[in-house]
Structures are given as C-alpha cells and as structure tokens.
Image 1 (tube, rainbow, N blue to C red):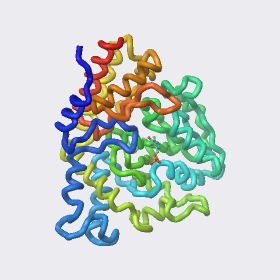
Image 2: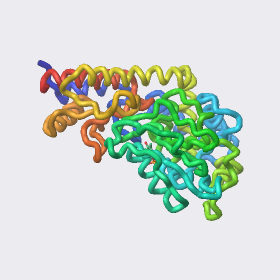
Image 3: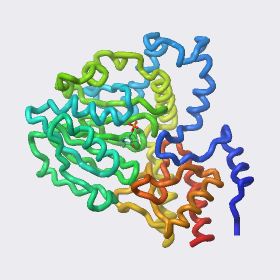
Image 4: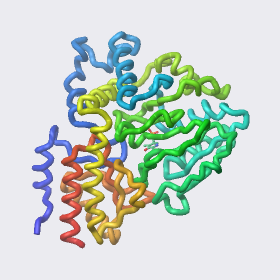
Length: 379
Ligand SMILES: *Cc1c(COP(=O)(O)O)cnc(C)c1O
C-alpha cells in the first residue's frame, strides 16, 4: 500500500516547471506554463523596447498592435463572422451582467428579456439585470439542484423579448449546454466565461458572447465581448460610455486606459492555441482530460458524480465522497500530492476539479490516479 508523503509531493512538484503545482482552482485558474514563461521572459523588456508591456502607453503603436492582434486572433480561432466586433471591457464577466441589459434590453419597446437559470452565475446575471426591465426566467434547473440543463420549450419564448441569456458552461455545478437554443430573430446572449476557447462553438448562433479572462484567457478584471454589430445603438440613455458597446467599439476598446497586461497576456494565450493547432485540437485535449476523470467516476461505486451524464462539463468536473470525513481526507491528501484547490463550490459541496485549457494532461492524469489510489485505500 502506498502512502502519500510530503517528500513525495515535493519531488513531484520540483519536477514541474517553476516548481508549479497542479492547480484545480475554478478561477483565477492555472494558465498555460509556456505562456507564463514567455510573459516572464519578456516582462522587463518587451520587444527590445527596454520597457515592460506594463510601462508603455496604451496608445503606442506597439500596444495597439498587441490589442489588434489579440482581437484578430480571437476572430480567427473561433471563425467569427465579419459582422461581429471583438471588444475588451473592464470589470470581468459580472460587469457584463449589467452591461448586457443596459445595451440590449432597449432593442424592443417592451424592455423584456428572457433568461435560463442553470446555476450560480446565471442566477447572478438574472439578479443584476432586474433594474433595467422585465426579466423573465423562462426555464430553471433550480428544482433539480442544477444537475442538468433544463428542457427549453422555444415556443414559450415570448416574441417581444429583446434577447435570451444563457450561461454556456456552469462553473459551480459542472454542467454545460451541448446544443444551444435556436432563438430565431431573438438574439442569443452567452456567458462563456468558464469555457471560452475550450471547444468549437458556432458564434453565428449568438448575438453576443462574453467571457472574463481568468479561466481561459489570462489575468482577472477584463472581459472579451464578441457582438453582432447590428445590436449596437440601443443602449439605455444612462449607460456609462465605458459600458456602452457601440462607444467601446468606436473607441477600439481604448476609451480609457485598458488593462494592457491582460490584453497582452490573452494575445499570448491565443498565439499559443493557434500554434498548437487551434480550438479543435484544444477541445480534443480537453475531452481527453475530462474523460480521464469521468472514467474513474463511472467505474467507481465510491465516488458520486454530481451531475447528469448528458450535460457534463469538460471544464469543471464535480463529484462527492461517501462522507464528510472522507471528503476532508481526500482534499488534504490531494493537496499533499500537489493537487490543489479541489474543494467544491460552497453551496454545492464535494469536489470540483477545474481543468481549464491551462491544465496539462499530466495534471488530469495525476488526479485520476490519486482518485483510484484513494478509493483503493479508503473505499
Ligand atoms: C467566473 C465566472 C463569472 C465571474 O467572472 P468575474 O470576472 O469574477 O466577474 C461569471 N460567469 C461565469 C460563468 C463564470 O465562470
């Protein structure tokens, strides 16, 4: 019987670049090693300028080139149609919970919007939209404890709503939409924060997709917004300029000083994705990582998967153990093995392994083999 030791974990950790752990944090989350290293290498002296990317003007031709390349790489990686704009905005995804209704609820005179409640963040989006119009939750997974994406009867979508909002991947529960609702003329809005650039998605199905950076793009505090241009021009009159999509687009996301480092970092992340073969290849690897963990769950009578098989996320894998004592021992021993931040969301409990793009295959392998070994000893 093997036992876990501090020394063993230290050896494993030392074997990783920079002594890095396998960090299963839901966000801010592990970013790709090669991008971290590149940012470190050119941190003091960017492109031979003798200054950091942090220290140069956001209006310098060097930074403007970074921002333009970040936007165009995103377009290329997701095959974004030409009639969409890419914006970089302050305040992460939660700021978009307000920006979306401020900009889009005025699309129709009724000032109504429809939302699907599939977890913690969709509930937050519903709450934050409330001041701006009539917000209707047309389907909710709450009665099922959010273990699956609720059935959606599109006939129940009122014709006069300005948009339908969904959360494409549910970070806390570990579910995702496999097939997005067909909304016809009603723009579909997606919060893709916890899965952006992790799987192939047809952006033309959406009027708007937003994602904050700290799961798959880079440092926290910034959001990427991809929006169909015909949705511009309906912002409520009190919308601040920095939250007004048309104004941000017109000012090329430079209405004030943007988070220059974040945009630079996201560019590096996207360069790396492109170099590795694009989103399809990243998705293949993500499927592989998730499958390693789901295989352990499916072959076990010890671990209890928390969500419906049909709606499993490949970014956030959730499960529970038979008792609070075993859960506690699992988390403690995992940490000693260099497997960190596995505690589930506080309202959900259990274990949550967030395996975003930055988690290497070896991290998922290490967790899968720890899970099997723990079950052998404690099951
Ligand atoms: C993490 C997360 C958010 C919150 O992002 P912030 O940048 O903290 O505002 C919103 N939505 C989803 C789906 C998330 O995973």
